[in-house]
Amino acid sequence: MSHSTEELLADPKRWEWFACHPHAPSSIFEVRSAMRALPEHSNFNAVEILHAILISHLTLLHIKHCRVCGCTEDYACPGCCAWANSEHNLCTSCV
Image (cartoon, rainbow, N blue to C red; front, top):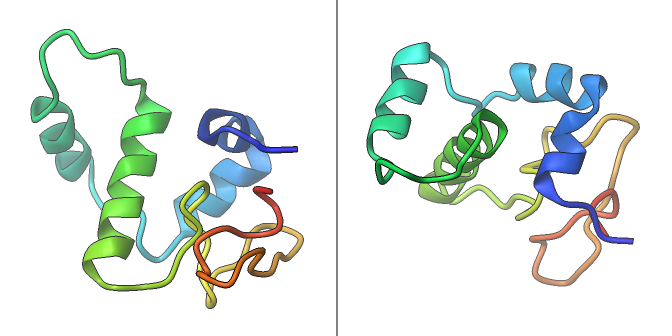
């Protein structure tokens, strides 16, 4: 069963995990800057924007991460996970 980003981040435990993620947005300024860069009438919500910033940080730093939730080798999903594919870009929690 596949989960959407919004479904994964709707869980309060996941938000706590996200807030502590070492590559999560570090300031409200960073989030506001990202929001200003979006087209005026975009339908992105806060969860999608925060997730996009996290994934962007991980990609720029060349850190292998799950393309759905953003977990890494050093920062696994709550309850633990493993890589679900040989590319190491999808974890077992997001399959």
